[in-house]
Image (cartoon, rainbow, N blue to C red; front, side, top):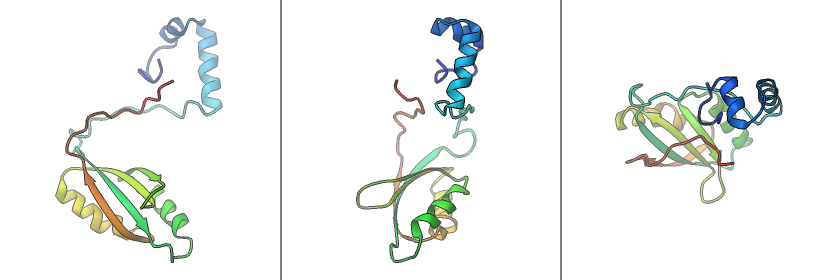
Length: 140
C-alpha cells in the first residue's frame, strides 16, 4: 500500500493491512529502521520539467587505469544528471540512465559530462523512442 501511495494516512494504512493504527505505525518505523523502506519522494513529470527524453548509455572503462572502477563510481555519485548507474555483466561495464530535454542536450551531456568521467574508454547510446512502462514498485 505504501508503494502505491507513500502519503497514505496511518489510519487508512492500518485498515488496509488489518492492523491497529499503533501497530501499523510501529511496523512502518521498524521497516524503515531495518532498511526495507528507503525513503519517500514525489514522482515528478519529466516532460514538464524539460527532461522528457530518457537515454541509456553503455560505458566501457579503460581497465589499464589504476582504480578505474572506484574512481568512476565515485564520480557518478555526485552527478545529479545521472539518474541510475548499474554495474552489469556482459560486453560493457556500466549502464547509465539519464533524462534530457532533447538530442542537443544529450550531445552536451556526452561532451561535458560523460566523456569527462574517469576511465571512460567507450560509450554506446540508446535513445528511448517510447517509454512503455516506468515503475519503481517492487512486486512482493
